[in-house]
Image 1 (cartoon, rainbow, N blue to C red):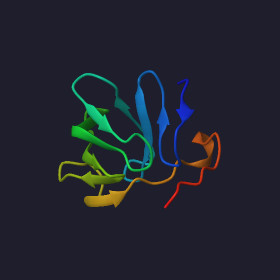
Image 2 (image 1 turned 90 degrees about the vertical axis):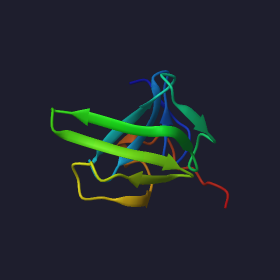
Image 3 (image 1 turned 120 degrees about the vertical axis):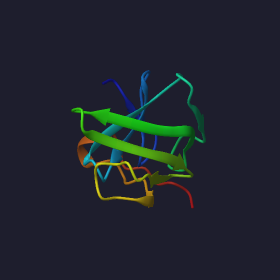
Image 4 (image 1 turned 60 degrees about the vertical axis):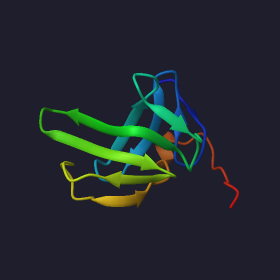
Amino acid sequence: MNAMQISRKFRESDAGYHHWCAGCNRLHTLPKGRGWTYFSPGDGMSAIPSFHLSWQNERVCHYFLTNGQIDYLADCHHALRGPQPVPDLPEDYRDFEREVPA
């Protein structure tokens, strides 16, 4: 994946935006196009509609992304539910440490 870090919490590539999911303990890719609309790319990003990611026929992560918060829904395979801040990218996925204005 040829991606560039755009904030402490997100990377961007031609394929989409990438962020760390604390529930799945892995990087998720939010695709560009295909019906999604993004607002304020960066730490406070929002998107509509929800994201429903699935793999290995039994793993599901379903959430809304609003103002830099992941709102995990009840059909997620992991225990996280409700609004949680998008975590900072793990060190292996960072190009830099970026200060975000308050």
